[in-house]
Amino acid sequence: MKPLDLLTLIVLAAVWGSSYLFIRVAVPAFGPWTLVGGRVLLGAACLGGFAALLRRPIVLRPIAGRLLVLALLNAAVPFVLISAAELHITASFAAVLNSTTPLFAAAFAVPWMNERFTPGRSVGLLAGILGVGVMVGWSPVPMSLPTILAIVAMLAASAGYAAAGIYARTRLRGVPTHTLALGQQLGALAWLAVPSVVWAPRTTPPGAAWLALLALGVVCTGLAYLLYFHLLERVGPTKVTTVTYVIPVFGILWGVLFLGEQLTGGMAGGLALVLLSMVLVNEVRLPGRLRPPVEGKAS
Image 1 (cartoon, rainbow, N blue to C red):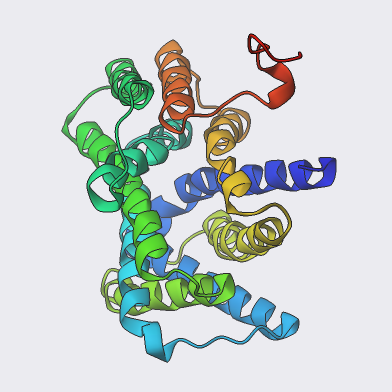
Image 2: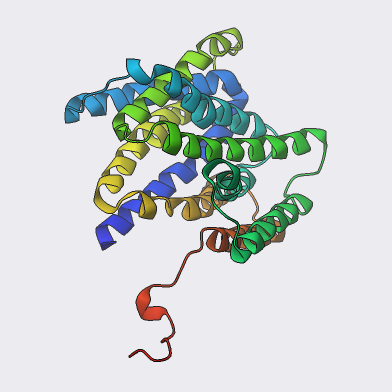
């Protein structure tokens, strides 16, 4: 990966990591349903504009049903769950919990994609479960029923993202990325239009909440997917997925810097275990130059 591509990857992680900050600011004023409805509406408008500017053809009708399923798993449900959770937990804690997405993906890939569990993957999943236990056991907020439900909601959102990735690979293979992204946002809007209106706030949200919603829709959805498409074309899907490892770091950083949240030892230790588990589960290997020489071969 070239330095410019690596910089773009870090910027993408920073943008997606900031979504937890913006959700935390906006959700008390808008409520989860209306906030997410506004986010996907703005995101769809931006992605549609990008596709038009780039003259990318968008064909939705033949795969509309599958796009609705993808939208439910990858946008509507996880966006609402994360927004509801952040009414009760900090943005940085939410970001750390959401780092479990690759672990769910690895677990789901065994029955759904016929992948096998190697000893390394098994150890990795156990480390991930332990990491979640450490985070929950030493959470930065007092443990109560709303907190527990928020933690469950965050883990369910991670599972939704993981299931969506597998669904897209198995049922939407070959569909252009612009079509997937825009179709997903439009599908999410279809799911959320009615509840967004029914549970709309009774009072006008403050200016900060509107700015946070604008940032969520335009920056964290529209701009983020534009960067994602750019990287996908330059470095391929395997390298792009490494952004998952960096997002929680920025999620914590923005929460600490702008919301005054605390990084607890439990969060740091749990995140370290989750990152270790992701390396083991995804069977990440050292580059060729760093591998020890093999006996009988020139080093």
